[in-house]
Picture 1 (tube, one colour):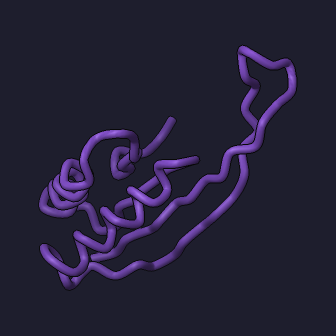
Picture 2: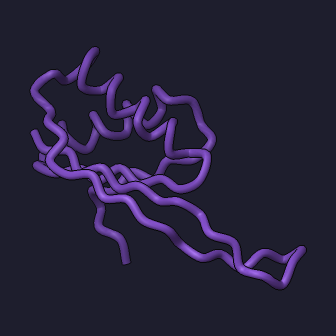
Length: 91
């Protein structure tokens, strides 16, 4: 079960995720986690940078965790590796 302070990055526009982070901070969260994997990693980094540079300069990047997950694909029987990132933001 993920905590309520997590923003999962997908295929939506970057500003949607910036708004989600801002909403969590404004609702009283001290720490917000931004998680992405695969091709969404660059969108996660963009969202964090837009948040910090344009909207909430007081937000700091506390920690960045990177890793790899193995995903079983339906087409092939071999597992494939997918990169993951978790960016921890503090206000």
